[in-house]
Amino acid sequence: MPKISPDKVEEIIQAADIVDVISEYVALQPAGKSMKGLCPFHSEKTPSFSVSKERQIFNCFGCGEKGGVVQFISKYKHLDYWESLRFLADKYRITIDNDDFIQAQDTSKRYFQINDLAKQFYNLQLLNLETGKNALEYLKSRGFDELTLNNFEVGYAPKKRDALWENLSKNYHDYELVNLGLIQKRANDYSDVFNNRIMFPIKNEQGKVVGFSGRIFAKDDSGAKYVNSAQTETFKKSDVLYNLNRAIPAINQSKRIVLMEGFFDVISAYQAGVSEAVCSMGTALTLNQAQLIKKYTDNVVVCYDGDEAGIKAAYKALLLLSQVGLEVKIALMPNGMDPDDYIQKESKSGFRNILKNQLLDQYDFVYEILVSRKDLSKPIEIEKAKLALFDFLDRNASSTIREIYLKKFGVDTSVNYEDILADYHSFQIDNAKLKNIQKQKVVNSIESKPQITNKAYEKAMKQLINYFAVFEEARDIIESKIDHIRFENKRYQEFLLVLVMLYKSNRIINEVEINKEFADLTDEELLLFRPRKNAVYNEKELNDCIETLMINKYDFEAKQLFEEIRSGMYSGVELENKQRRFQELQNYKIIIRRNRNVKKTNN
Image 1 (cartoon, one colour):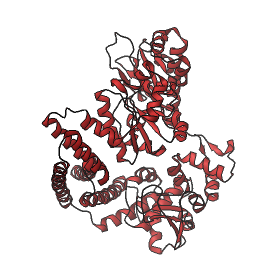
Image 2 (image 1 turned 90 degrees about the horizontal axis):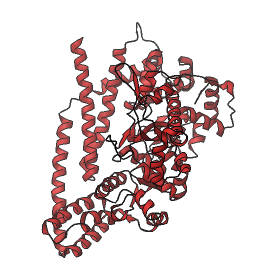
Image 3 (image 1 turned 120 degrees about the horizontal axis):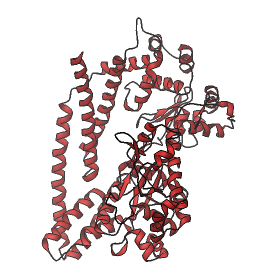
Image 4 (image 1 turned 60 degrees about the vertical axis):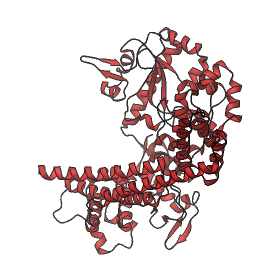
């Protein structure tokens, strides 16, 4: 999207009163000079979300989200900065003419253009040229008609080793094509990454092509079944869900997402009248993908392959989806079939009926795979099933649900319920002991780490504000790190937020503008925005400030995690994730300190 001129940005921001805007989404109540409410970006019972009409900024003291009116809309509506400005301009009926745009070189925009051209090239090969004849016949034999293939923009990468390169290199640099994972450099020339494969374009939520996945189809092809684009500036496989952009209207209508394993499953589901289907591209579901689903709905139907591998994958997905607060149901395909096979070999109406009337809730599904499918005539199988069931119920179920399934287990195994309950209580005791051991490891880890003094934090906060206010070359560096630092002093935090807001709004940063934003500055505070005597830009000093405040953020988060771990409220996968995150934070601090020591040694 073209950038809007600074004057127009200023006009939009001046018109968009932050209290007026945020009040549409958050119930705000007066609290001194500010307004307070429950934060829309994290779950809380006590309001920690503050909005200042005077300073036109918001700040959540719970989760750390902060910024001006544009940043709020960007975060709340999932829009980028320029899209948020357009939203506010529409709201306040501000017209943006062609003269209000400035053109800037945008690498991402150029990369999206290249990917789109590659998509068109592949699609043309499949549906309109002789080169794609065999691939098209294969797809038709799988039950896909040309209209559907064209709707999903499926394509074909020719056998010729440099067909795409020849097409794109006339207008784009070779390094751009390499960076996008479309072309690879050989000793003396370039060749296409994808050859003789059916091509599935991968799009982000906005419908822009971010990458590709290529599938073999020829019987004599011994290569990997699927090859995905490498991670690039536009594509990170673990952050994207195939077909989400097309499925959003159906998701909004049906209030659910049907999560599948593969491209063919999704396309078959579409042909069967199920348009809210997406897939994670054949890889294990990630936390980022689960959170992406949560952004659009609270309800998920996991519809994976019906074989043993698919059932295990569905179980793992269920645990991950539940972790982010999603309501999960499972659609089990009969006779070990995958959804595509079932639709093609059985019926479309039968598939829709399974998704409507034959869904298992998460407890029935887990009981099915942990218990019902075991040979309960063998004591060793009963013991394995019992421990697996205990572990799941302990982590995911209420007392009522536990009682229901423990009694059911007793009936199915002909074991007295009281004995099962006694074993379960022993399991809980052993689990508690294990958690105490793990907690003590965390305590020891915290106590063994050197702490930075509050005085050092305060010095770093002041210096960072001064660098941003005085040195133009420091602003991009600081702005890129702002989500990775933490200010202890909320007043200083507001100073930095206002500076960033001025910078991102293309406004001049000087003492006059600062005084417009803060009418109550003390003489000591004014010094933060003025050049220090004999001061020069020192990148090492700037990085030291940033690293100190990064450690502060990691310390703060680690202490919060420590309290959560110590509370005993978490177990199983959730506890393991918190412990893993805690160790990550400790490692981040170690790396920063180690790098500092290396720099000192080198100097």
